Image 1 (cartoon, rainbow, N blue to C red):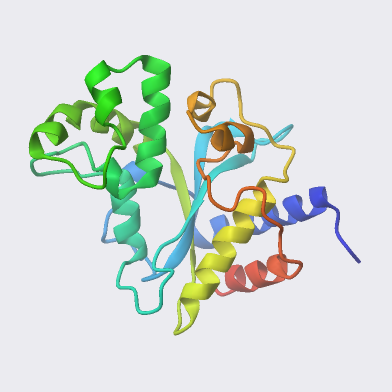
Image 2 (cartoon, rainbow, N blue to C red):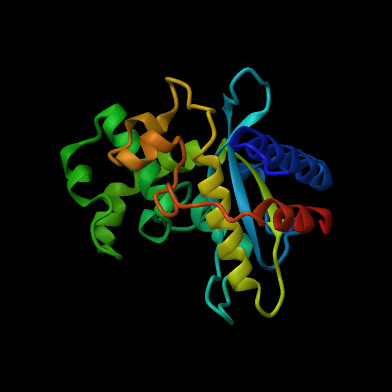
Amino acid sequence: MTLSIDERVEKFYNLLSILKSHLGGYRKLGGCTGKMNWPDKGVYYFFNPNEKRRGDEQLRVVRVGTHATIQNAQSTLWGRLIQHRGTLSGKYAGGGNHRGSVFRRHVGDALMNRDGWPEFVQHTWGVRSSAESEIRKAEHPYEQKVSDYLGDLFVLWLRVEGSESHKMRSYIERNSISLLCLSEDRPSESWLGNFSSSDVIRKSGLWNVNHVGESVDTDFLSVFSNYVKMM
């Protein structure tokens, strides 16, 4: 029997609830450490504690992500989450590098639009793939604001490992985003993403721009369910 869009979205969220149970609950990004039992490779789902699904107390997914989508890539799931969370110590403690995390870049852009950051930051934010130390120093207080926001988000993760798993991580990320975009769940009026410069982010209700509006594979939920069961 072919499921309706609403039924597919509900099934997906039900599977996320099962995943949440397997993991022992959501984890607050700001409280995560490398000592936790992270899989080497995986797909992750971010939730905003203030973003609920329509008529439900269940939290709404606000971003889907993955890493190591090229065969033999060395990046790890925890390493990718650190890039989003930011640094806890060192020269730029409490901040981070939005040039190494598109998630940080999008969040900073929305904070900038909402809060009216200084003009010099507006001119440098998101420009080029690296920046001189002088620019990094000037941007640091605003990187800290991004870290504060991201640190309050909740995260769940799905282990996706194996010799050909780079393809499967891409598959799960792509189809998760595509399916969530079909949901009737809409962001609250206070959701920071409403202030994004990206029309795609504002309309989708996700901090994602890739794979928005793409088709969903008919076998996706079965594949996703199998990976959830293996957690």
